[in-house]
Length: 275
Image (cartoon, rainbow, N blue to C red; front, side, top):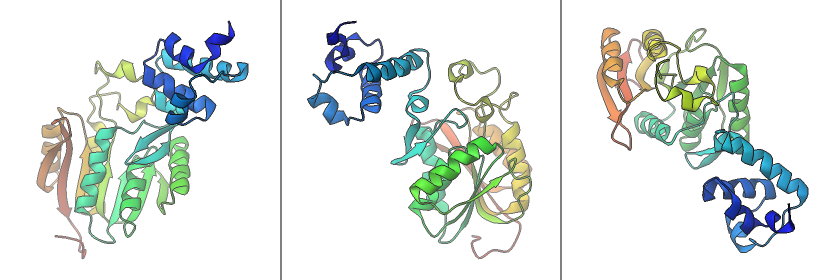
């Protein structure tokens, strides 16, 4: 290895990754901004820096998502820490936050089920500080990341370690969830092998978590239930909500014009937030 191969502009030329990913790795290793990387492209990495870069480069070539390599992902214009215990936040899930915020009245009580990195709950709270937000997750490792993200971002949220609504006793004005909805035989699942499989699939038909949330939400809801689901699950989710007595049901399409969120309304108890 000659000294030339340690220079930023040569590393960019030699990389088998796309240019953006290579730049992200170099910025991460060197602590450079994107602008610094451009203006200092004649910078020569130390051997230790180059070894660190190569380690991350190999992981990226092996298919590990960039969010796990860097340890963070941007969501709703904020940086959220992620690791292999949490699902990587998707841009389409920002629509779920938009919809909660559009429906939430001042001081509404919001429950986020299966919070993962906490991106939904934290974003809702920071956008509308008057909301009372609770977030749950079955997995302590994921909940620890959510708690850490809330502390870093200054979001006052109550966290509960539980499986969906098991152990929940309060009544909420909005219940929201992005549950695992990929069927176990879905052709896209193998490409997502680095992410926690329990956050992606129910290891069955992709609908079991959605069924349980809809069935159990009735006892804890005086307002709206919002569920993110697959592009072909809107009608099934609607049928389940109808079965359990929800009304004013509608499905919202995402930014790619695919069915993404189904909303239902239930008012089983008195609340000054009810419509």
